Image 1 (tube, one colour):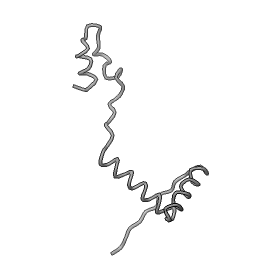
Image 2 (cartoon, one colour):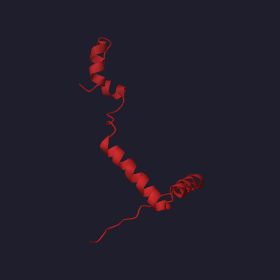
Image 3 (cartoon, rainbow, N blue to C red):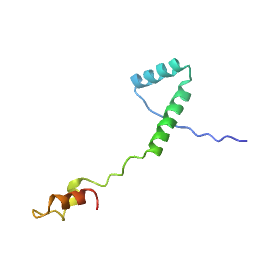
Image 4 (cartoon, one colour):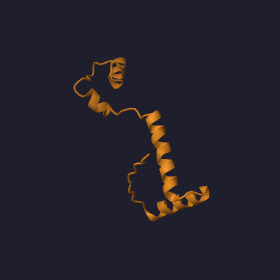
Length: 82
């Protein structure tokens, strides 16, 4: 079985890199393995619970629709995208 790998380059400032090195050392892991595990764990979290899509600002959603005569309920329906 052939394992395909790809490379991911990452730029960090010195303080961030030192923090990651220290954390990896505390876990007894190579830095690359530590970063890979942390990134994959975060990716799974985001995929499992995706953030709600942004549909623009409230002002943009109400533009052209809102009038002084709109009720609060009508405005709330627009904010929810109904």
